[in-house]
Image (tube, rainbow, N blue to C red; front, side):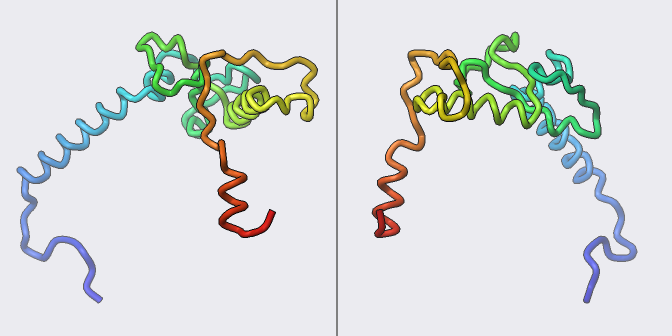
Length: 138
């Protein structure tokens, strides 16, 4: 089996290499404009809930949470973001889901967490009916 790569005697195409490097820089700039990178630049690498600190080795476990649960609300000052570890981020969304569905008492929450009134979209609405129809059992 032939190994991929340059053939003996082929020189390095400097123009092609420059284009690859330029594209890599452009893609990195595009990624840095993303809200996660902006939040990591603006906020400390610490979970805002549990206080766990992060470094290069585990920074991928630090997520950006939208405080108002609207992923389209990304102000450049980062006021709608908070950095949360995977576990606290998961709990934040579970808590929010329980509040929206009214199931908060089933999970030991004594008071209903605050939910913004303008939230009307439920991505799982009708899921039970769809699964029942597809599976053929109730």
